[in-house]
Image (cartoon, rainbow, N blue to C red; front, side, top):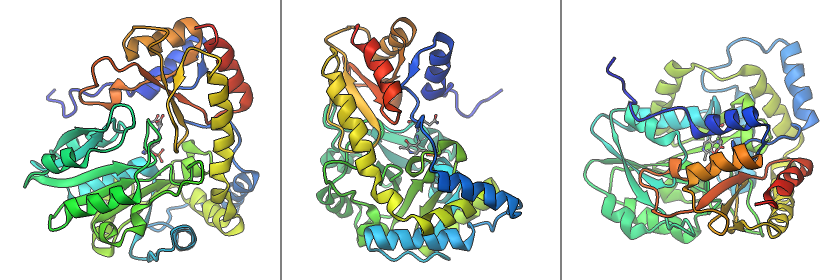
Length: 380
Ligand code: PMP
Ligand code: GLN
């Protein structure tokens, strides 16, 4: 058949998780926590199901959850977002990204993506009949080169995607970055998609610079987040999109016919959780910083060189002291021969930097899991 995504295979996350399972490796590859979801949230989910919230939710999300999200945005970012016209609950950030692209990107358009980029961006763009234009981030700091971004803008550019804190590197955009970006987009018709799923996982006293805080960018942006990252429940697949009313209206047309509505019981559970324990997201940075610091300390006893991690729950390591394999081969070898699964960076690129020797390790794990991995990594 004439296929639409000829260059797409099985995602690297699935491939490495399967390889880890087949070889009994400690899985630091695919990004997901191996510790418990907050008890209060599990109770709230069970209660929602017992109370009968098992049928379709309103298409845009239950009002109590949209209002709780609006209250969170006011608390955390001191911004006003209208629960009825600007917030839409989705089946994870993945669905939100897909809907945002399909709401505004047409066949023949171009979408600027900063590499390395999360894997679901380009397929969404291609399915819309558009083309991803890849601009590399700095190969070590993963900072954007805004001059190169400016040079990539053409009359066909319809959207630009950013992701902070960044997967896979953890790099974060600064307020100055957002100002520079606003200057680039001023007087253009380019929409912005800001993937902020790791918004609460930031370290060392840094502040996450949400696009929602930047009125000029917010006016042209779809801002996407995910409850999976914040509440340790990636399998629940619930997220949301914040966009100005006119953009939300278009976004909802796609959401309506993509899924219609998202998992209703979880919407009730998060509405209850956000109301009862708003400080959960405020403690997330410290919670993960303790894991990051301990893991980095342990890595000093290996031949892997840890790169800085400003945010998110991934640690990049430079393995060039232990191996000359390319990153895909190294991660396979590490999984099969050494019993630790990692994610190579090359699948996040259209053109990986030649000679790059980096692998991604997820530290959203119990201490025992990380300890077991370190014992194996010490033998490299
Ligand atoms: N964007 C980024 C940068 C991610 O890391 C992830 C999850 N790994 C997603 C989007 C997707 O989020 P969700 O699981 O809520 O669909
Ligand atoms: N976002 C997760 C990661 O980066 C993977 C999610 C998935 O498997 N699709 O590891």
